Length: 401
Image (cartoon, rainbow, N blue to C red; front, side, top):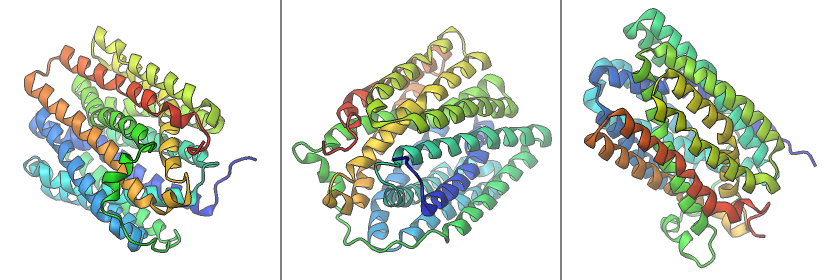
């Protein structure tokens, strides 16, 4: 039977697409904006670290709201806070570097509220038979946004100058977030699901034979890499080129590669191919950093980005599907999906915070090119741990097998 997506799944993809578009327009350039104001590696790291703290706290506390209240309002709050972040940056201008922790907490809360609600709704509108398809579309849409939006932003900043260019892209992001809120009102309000178990995110993995004992180390390794790569790669591209248009071109090309890869892999991925695909993807992503050892310039960074984008869907799609399938292994797990979504985020969060903490230690010690490249190589190899840890889960179509 061919997997299909219903109207609510498609609408959720639209909201996700608008949220991704707004972030893609300005996300990479926020760090460049802060770098140009202070030229401080540590400042960028503390900005990321404050986001992780805020995101984790929001995930945990908002779990009660999502389970016992209106999860759609939590989704809208996340989108609204993301818009508020860019409004505050517009207001502060270059003075934003003096409010790194405040800005990080706002953006982290935005991501925490949005992704908690999104992941719970995603679980409810999909099933194990169409989650690979949905995740493929998520990757496809994210790649489309990452392909066009940063290029347009880089072009505007280059043509209009720092002041006007940044004001325009931050303003457009704010408006797109408002559009996402509007579309979210067509998503059906979903009923409360009982009482929120505050302890479950800390205890579910302790049970003998719990699949979370395999999933959490895998998620932590994934989070450690993603938590740093999310901001450092774009920053390194800008530092190597000192040109926003070059950064826009970089994201255009790498996202175009990811677009095609997510489309193909999302359509052909089957449960039987998850495990071998996962290992192929992780090994290839680990090897992608090799060109940087011969010199960090636009060409080597582009080759690194292309290889990573080409093979990352082999890792991302089965990882995402397998961890969400755990939540549907039986009726009890499905009823605890909010708490288990929080648990999943905690796994990623621990990894992200560890990765950013390691980054802060490294840049305090040295910021020379060989050190930065070696650090990227270590982080790039971490998904191998994910593949080894979660291999037994991705090998089965149903986690209960």
